[in-house]
Image (cartoon, rainbow, N blue to C red; front, side, top):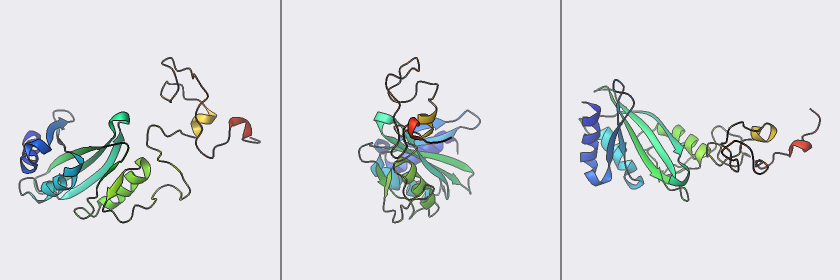
Length: 192
């Protein structure tokens, strides 16, 4: 199947109003990309796995993208070992209540990916019973892959680009840089 046929097949299974089909990657490496609403997330992954024509039986990875005011994009890649094609599924969750259904019941290997995404972005996975810290120490506060998270290294050495909150277009800070919780001011570091 071509990437266009893969995307169209999943859209037909879900209903045309519940999926938007596109392509990602270059021509030789194009991948079917299907965007679904959060309430269709679980159904989309089940349909991709169970449909004979798609047969996406291998869960490759799951992560997220911080889209600022637009919320968070949750992205997963599935692969068909039988037909040798891939499928990229995406959904967007609201920033104020970032949660989507867990797919661990469909793909047990998703447990680690969901735990990491919860820890790094703060996106909940309804139905996942073990969203414990995976990579960070238990006392760590915040979600380090969110764009508003202030890195401790920015306190010691300012970033040269205009990417931090409060910086102008020219890269000159209009105000003092933000400090993460528990990081002392530069004058309070002690002996170097």
